Image 1 (spheres, helix red, strand yellow):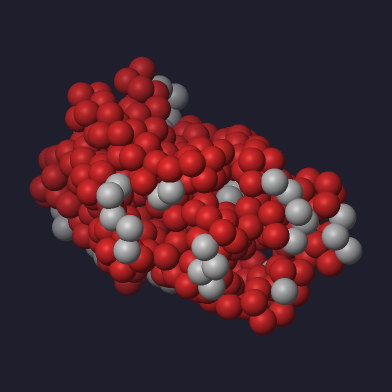
Image 2: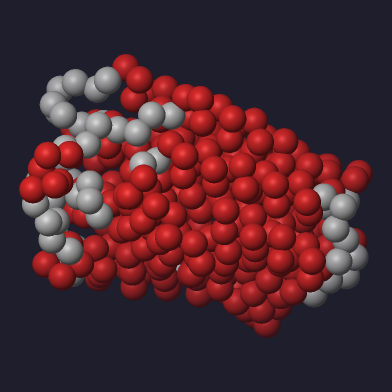
Amino acid sequence: MSDEKTPAQAWRILALGVLAQAAGTLLVSTPAYLIPLLHVQRGVPLAQAGLLAAAPTFGMVLTLVAWGALADRYGERWVIAGGLGLTALFALVAVPVSGAVGLGLLLLAGGAASASTNAASGRVVVGWFPKSRRGLAMGIRQMSQPLGVAVAAVAVPPLADRFGPAGPLLLAGVVLAVLAALCAWGIRNPPRAAAKAAADTPANPYRSSGFLWRIHVVSALLVVPQFTLSIFGLVWLITQLHWSAVAAGIVIGIAQFVGAIGRIVIGHWSDRVGSRVRVLRWVAVSGVVVMLALAGTGAVAWSVAAAVVLIVATTVSVADNGLAFTSVAEAAGPAWSGKALGAQNTGQFLAASAVGPGVGALITAVGYPIAFALVAVAPLVSIALIPPRDRHWE
């Protein structure tokens, strides 16, 4: 595919991919925004509430590579549409469930099904867009996660306050069912070099260099501040800085929306700079700075300043995803990109699964400011692991 030409339908497919993953993220993020209901109103310990919030993320860990392998073998269209349909089913079945164990298991299953969009929608972007536009396109695609979180932050607290967990779960189930139908109708698998694939046995990119392994580890480290803020940012504003649940939800929603726009800007910037890893390094350095700034404003309880820094920190914390995804897909090549993106997500969500209970326990032990400062260690360590140069399969 020429670097100068982008097929018109690529943009439609990209839009559907963004909406598909945003819908999956809505379900995955819902239990995090149930924490004020569970912890503040019902007295559930923060670490236990964080464990419930981590259930869908852990479910994703179990299936990401498998979904990626299915996309490599059968194409992206039905992997995305079928996965969304299953996610909708689990969300709707969970609506009447009140027990923590049953709800946790259904959220685990819903997260496992939603992983289809993470592995396959990135593969669609790489397949339909030329190299010179992939940073921008992947940045747009990566808007889906903060957009889904933003919708959850704004919608879940008031719905949960009025209807309990059933209200947000019903919303997620309906949205997922609609998107499953739209993706089945509108997504098309990208053209593949069938003759070349048949003639050549693609080499395993994990054996030829350590590039992919390093990107996977870096991404797992950088996801720690991202999920710390997305899981505990809302309850921090409410319990420590005394914001109302609605006002705090609006702040988190703004933060996620700005973060979504930031992913597009960072992706386009990497196209202009001509390097994903160079920009990734700048993002990692910024991650250390903003987490320390958040710890400082929280320690002195500057409520408005802390909210502003939270928005900036959230924007920085999500900026690396598109860069890393594009790097992984470009280094792995079309025959391995589904599995490699699945492995990429697996590492990220393994780390993310530990954030809920782990950082929840840390906050309980030392308080929010010190916990935020300690979380800054993760992006600090990642700086030394970022590869010095990009790698391309072509």
